[in-house]
Image (cartoon, rainbow, N blue to C red; front, top):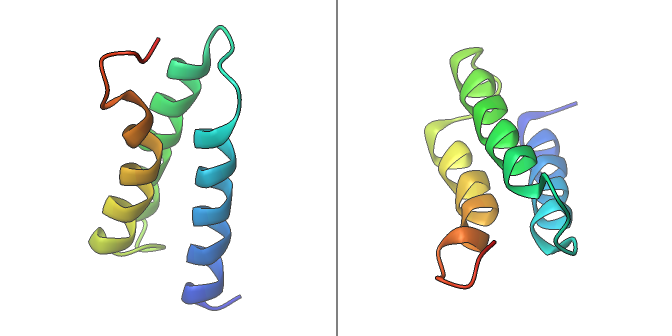
Length: 68
């Protein structure tokens, strides 16, 4: 699988997680996903820009005061 296809799949997964209804433990799941993107970056599987895009999707949920 080429890097752009892999990245597109990661973005789709991040969007599904971000848009999923709130549930107990969602914040921890998102935090684990962010840690996983760090590992992917260190392994050379994604670029810094790709990591930032994925984290932006994931962490965008908690950028507002109403986040649980």
